[in-house]
Length: 398
Image (cartoon, rainbow, N blue to C red; front, side, top):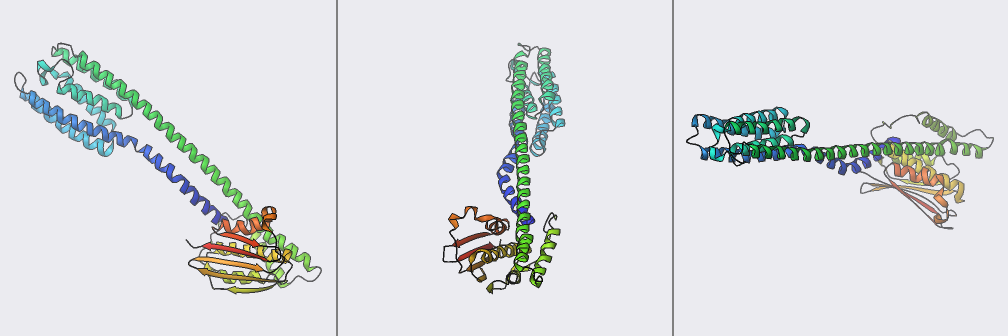
């Protein structure tokens, strides 16, 4: 029974965690998504830079320098896009990219016409600006922000060596601004990501603790049910037997209860296979010699834990007939229809008004309803003063 209750609890917990797991997986997919965005942007900028470089070629630039440079830029852009898209923004990828851009900036005078050196409209400036922004998207601003600022410095140095009218200050300043702003944005994004992941982890720990506490409470109730329907009932039977020699039925039930007590410390119910529910119920009815029990039990195979739940609930129902119904006759019916196992225990005794019985007592609440609920089944008690009582037990196959 404890294993069944724990399995049900774990199933509910898994269902509750499903939405949170999906949210957490979405957070962990954020960096790959950023890397793919950077790859797409770099691909577009690379095509634009190479095209602009080809259009700007010719005197006074030397094709012997410009053409190989553009080939390297095109090849590197292809490599960058493939790696960033499939494996993310790796450190070696970002570092190599910034080194290549720094070399282009230092040689900008041989790659860009003098008329295009000022400002940030040259293909080298465009390529460099995208590189420093992509570096910050890698999510390591403490490492790549200083490197990007150094690349901005090479733009200023290269532009001055090429005698740019503005000395590369505009392009270099723009690269600094872009690097700092992108780095700050990534710091905020990464902090939000860490906070969200931490919150989900704490929520998961809290739910795990709650699940463990619920499992422990269910385990305690299962043990109380076993004690109530085992030793306490046997003591009552022995009391009513008086000084006479204990009957074979009483001795048999006492032995079974003793075995159950010895197994109370077992962590799980490891039994497998199927049990004959009709045989179990027939055996339970023999315990109550004070009753004339009419049985109508169809052959039925169920898991052992389910058979235990039905047997315990039926025993509790018959025990209540003996104690409270004021009759010596009862009936037990077992049927299975459309994968739903139904057991009914009925008597024509004095009955009672369920609404007036506070909590229905421990026996009906835990030993009967509690057993069936823990096994994934259900129960219902129908009674009316003077009209007897019916206990309905159900369990549906998965």
